[in-house]
Length: 396
Image (cartoon, rainbow, N blue to C red; front, side, top):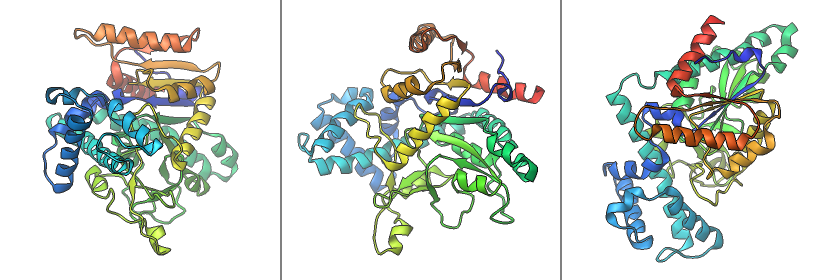
């Protein structure tokens, strides 16, 4: 398997699914509930949230105790969201109680994902190396813009150079942290207008820590002759917190636990200056058949994702099975993919019993969705593809 050189074929858009993070220990969506139940009751907040989840599943959804771990998240969130939207109760829970419970669920899901990845990486040191390699490859391509911007005569070329972007349907921040690290964002700034790169979520962001100048919008960085690495997270991110009043989005890289502990416990500093007390909340778009994409920041991400897809000369789906449940994203693809765009799909063919059937089903979904378009399939999985991609970049 080889990976083609993106510089020769126009903009490349990588679309990442849960399979991208799986080799580093991230659980599948189907396995998240089991991971929640494995969490130790190491604090009152976690213990209360887990107990409320158990009572909801047993008393309100009437799930058998031995089948709790098998419940699909959509079957939890869809009735909750319907009741919240209609202002109705669900069994013993009022709409306001359901909204509070929903926030606790988001906290539990984030804790479960973080714990599963940490546990796996502790048992398999170096398992996330491919994420660092992919991030380094992406940053090296994007940094070309800063090189062009330093040359005043090449300002037009710098503006025109837009080689790639990443669209992720994942919540975890493995890649976010890897890109941030590859950008060298832990080094001291020599001045605000040094041309450096930023992780660009393609929406309006502020640093959770008010003194961190490295967390800026991509447009700000470009205006300072820097560059941006576009990472559009359609379902939100575990390192995003949002003010429910002013809608500002606060970002932090590094420790996931520190971010999770701030959920509902940190005031928006901008609103606080105006005499308002608004606690920051999570901004994850949860698995439900009634997804609410009306959030101002999320709408910006989706709108920009549509533009990126439309401009792409090559779409590379990495670890994404194109499930029919993702009908909003499938609709975006149907609207925006250029008629001449090349399509590549990175999946894991596998050798275990059932792998071949799963792989054929995933290939079938892509073949049916894209119709007559030629699709190039890679069956060596995420790590094999990233290895080939980096090797082709070195030899280019």
